Image 1 (cartoon, one colour):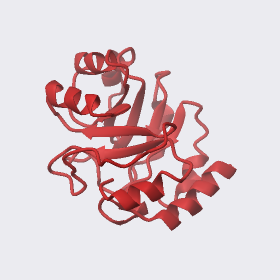
Image 2 (cartoon, rainbow, N blue to C red; image 1 turned 120 degrees about the vertical axis):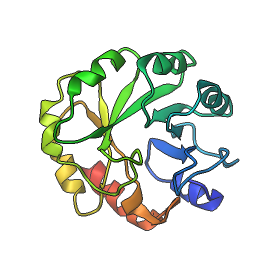
Image 3 (cartoon, one colour; image 1 turned 60 degrees about the vertical axis):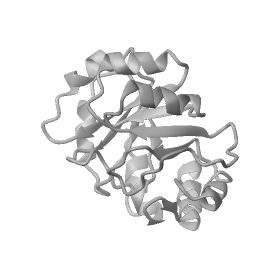
Image 4 (cartoon, helix red, strand yellow; image 1 turned 45 degrees about the vertical axis):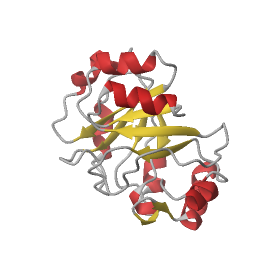
Length: 196
């Protein structure tokens, strides 16, 4: 999210998180958290890719309630951030041969995982991975589902039926352009999610 009016409109919806992408190679990159009032029920979330601990800590002090890490950040890095009191979400790109044991060292150091479609650009593909792979997820840590969620497959996502799945990351398929959310489309899909 980048544009103040769009953030204000989004903040009036029944959502839990709002993301700010501090990854310079992203088309949604933003330098600073916009000075827009967001209800305390919505967690301001910074999205980072292999950023230095110093820079992430700086953004936390500027007002983040959660961080989402999309790079190769080690468990010790997550541990340091979690000690500040923010929620830590560690993202992993999922593919057919994904080794779930890679997550084991993170279970005590993060609050949630986020499972996205594997890609060299650390997400943002707009494509869904094969959700059947989630049947092999062996850990108890709750997770968000990301990657290619759209009005066409939300119903299928809601049928996954895994109590560990605690949230859906609604991103590119709900934008008018990168960084600008389609509020009307989100209103409709959020109603269908909340009605389930």
